Length: 220
Ligand SMILES: Cc1cc2nc3c(=O)[nH]c(=O)nc-3n(C[C@H](O)[C@H](O)[C@H](O)COP(=O)(O)O)c2cc1C
Image (cartoon, rainbow, N blue to C red):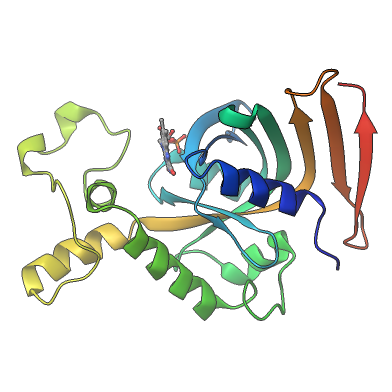
């Protein structure tokens, strides 16, 4: 499979705008209702999967387990471009059926993205790369639970190291890391909208059944 044409576009945009790492990530609830929220882009794998991270206890892992079709809207403000990406998403975490996840992503048999150990190393690397404040969030009470029903926020951890030699700290880290998951996204269609040129430009990329991508320029 050749490298999708949209991939260098995203890579170039990120190179020029390294701070533009936030996109809107839309899932469908179990009732079929659209649910959208912002997440942070955490990388692209060599087989063009987009990565973000989440807490296993949040709603999006449940949504994508029920219906893996997702959409992303990513506005890169300094260059005034938008990527709209439709695809399939899975949660990568030891609690998940990763063989099934690889089928959804189409990565079965691939050396990296079809390998459970590769993903566990990736999860560890991402855990180390996020801030201690962000890591601490994974050790707090279940997101979305009524505040009256959880322990006093004074006892919540403020920051958590990625690793520790101290048994007490190791316990806190393990509890938080147990909730830390990757969301891997396999794009199926990408629309690139350029708002700086007049007239604006809009290009659509679609993955074919043979894995190749076609490109169509459309009226903006
Ligand atoms: C700028 C920004 C970045 C965020 N990044 C993430 C992220 O990377 N992962 C995540 O799970 N939530 C992130 N959030 C929080 C989500 O938007 C959302 O509130 C949370 O994930 C709960 O959503 P859910 O219950 O629908 O899963 C971010 C929010 C903002 C405003």
